[in-house]
Image 1 (cartoon, rainbow, N blue to C red):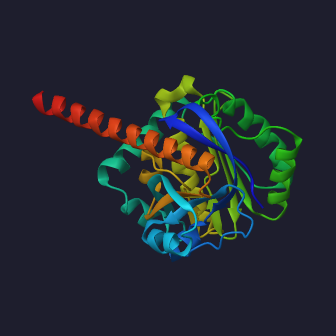
Image 2 (cartoon, helix red, strand yellow):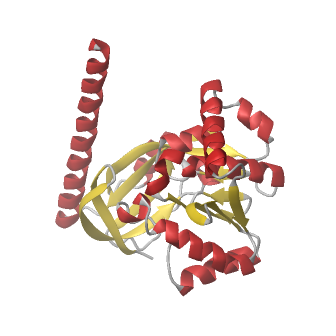
Length: 297
């Protein structure tokens, strides 16, 4: 059933303005993306459909199947994931020597700052979720993810109740990294079957020099591979150096907006496409300019 969906005009982390349309929001799971599975669109379209993580190789077939909609590609990206059943030593061997050295240096720096012991606490049981949620919210409200992207950990009784329900089914993992007894980073990962979802990560910007989010992720991957409960870690839509660093595989994907060809929809779709193209072009020019400066130096 279609619902009101926000379509942002965004430059990097900053949203300039938003428009709303009644859309069916259809996110593909990691398994669907890896299999190259085409989604079946609901019969009631509203203003259209927003398909997330459509495998790029399937785009032409999707467009041929739904010719009565006007297509707009919002973004292209690699959907990164990590296999958790390879063993931690083999996992590390797949990371470049330079990156392994960097990770160990960051871990060592934070351990030394912590007095010789990394204070990382893991949460998985229903009775532990209230403590996790309280500590994670303290970090989230200070993190750039919440302040700039509106992507902080959800607050309130319903969010905590959902966490407890997942924990009762052994379908969630959470971690809090502490320094001097205070939480400075968190990671929250609910599960779909044997796949953990990279849902929320945040850190206190006052401790950014210690790379707490990177250290937390590194140790979380170690714990998950030692535990052996889950098969995959899904870094979800969108790219980023953090996701690339910790991944073992990727799927080329795109977010496809299919709009009913009404005048209002076409005006909005064309504006979004033009804005996205302008931002992409500006990024290419900036990268080229920085490269030329680097070469001259």
